[in-house]
Length: 154
Image 1 (tube, rainbow, N blue to C red):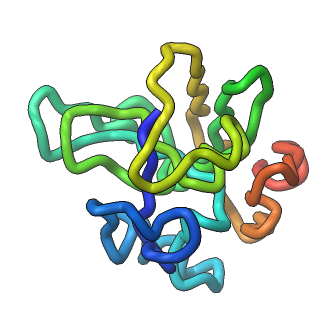
Image 2 (cartoon, helix red, strand yellow; image 1 turned 180 degrees about the horizontal axis):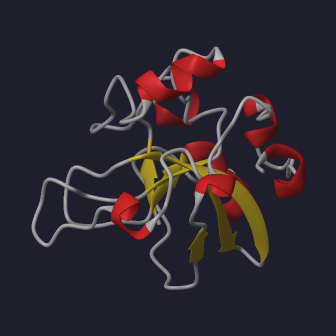
């Protein structure tokens, strides 16, 4: 699990030491319609999925995964809800926001560290019912407040 510190407040909190943070996520324009500037890795639980511009490429939307769609991450013996909130600038997938990484593996996680064990499961959902809509409370996506998928995505 690599750490993603892109988006709003990319140099705050545990992202201070991230040398690769970018000022916006891939879906900044899409989250704006929900009244937030951009996803904030320190506050929002999101995964980085897809790498459309590289080879080999993987474009989740080709398989029915909606942008800002719901995901479940099983890590550290627990599960957490997230959204697909960014894409990767290389061929790897598996980054998560620092808030999600901290929920999974504790306070030792930073923007320049990660979790190297192969003990993480990422589940994403397909179809329009998996997409974020006006009922999403983006601040409940801050672990450990695990929102009920049935209450926030339909």
